[in-house]
Length: 149
Figure 1: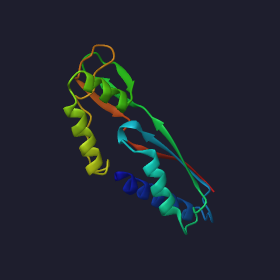
Figure 2: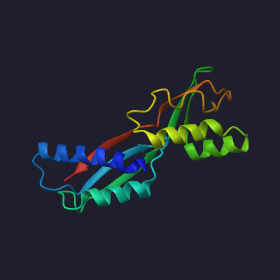
Figure 3: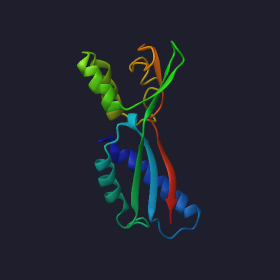
Figure 4: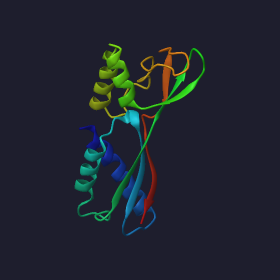
C-alpha cells in the first residue's frame, strides 16, 4: 500500500508548513492526485485518519481531487488527456496488457519520487494517430494545493 507512505510525506510537509506559520490547527488539506500515481482514495483517506490522530490536524479533512494524465505523442506532436483505468481496459481488450501491469507494479513498489522518470513512455496510445511513441508528461504527481487552518 504505497498510499500510506505518500500520505505520510504529504502530512509531514503540511505539519512543517503549519509550524512555520505558527498555526495551532489544520482544518483541511487539499491535494491534487494525478491519476497515474495510482493512489486509491479510500486507502489514502484511511492513512490520513491514522496519521492525524493526536496532531494539530486531528479534526482535519483531506480533500482529494483526481486529475487526468497527459500524454505527448512524439509522432504527431499531439497532447491528449487520459485516465489510467480507461487506458488499461482498452489495452486488455486489444491484448496488450503487459506494459500496463508493469507500470502498476513499479508504481506500487516504489515511491513515485524514486521511480524511473521514463515511467509511462511508449505505453499509451495517441488519440490522434494511435502511435505508442508517447511520453506521459502529466499525471504521476501529487500536489499540495492548500492547507486551511
